[in-house]
Length: 199
Image 1 (cartoon, rainbow, N blue to C red):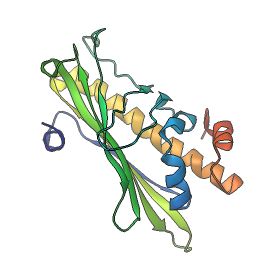
Image 2 (cartoon, rainbow, N blue to C red):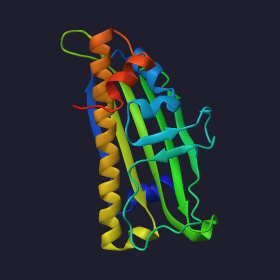
Image 3 (tube, rainbow, N blue to C red):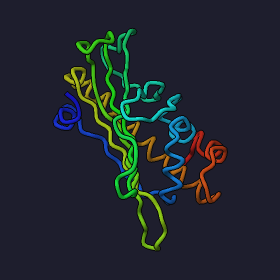
Image 4 (tube, rainbow, N blue to C red):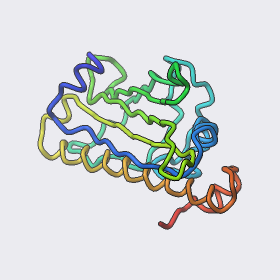
């Protein structure tokens, strides 16, 4: 059970959003690939203590702002293991992806599965109509599992994942704003402009 089952699940639609970001690909990837800084520009992330990005590394030191309002509520002893399942460039160097899979487990054992899912950011080099180097960004997220067997929870998860998608688009828009204003993406400039960001 994982990616194939997730894609085939009809419990909720995948949330997919794309934006053209006016930041050169190399500059945007270099800044984006510092996950510990995501809370400075993407309000989905309350904190991110992840510093190792190898495939299959844990991606657990993350706190999110979009907890779904499910019924019954999540159990107090729930665990949420996350693992990096995609990180790096395509063979031609024009695409970069960072993705992770996750599970919510009621008591920490596989038999207590609540939901499972995947979130992936894909950045692609793009030369716009003026010949300027920019970046196409896509966010993909989907969740499936026993908790989504009820309508109320399907709606709750759809809303939560849509909030995640919107936070990502707003965050990349803010990074573009910083780049236009400063010609780069320094953490200090991003923090001043994007935390919080008012479009």
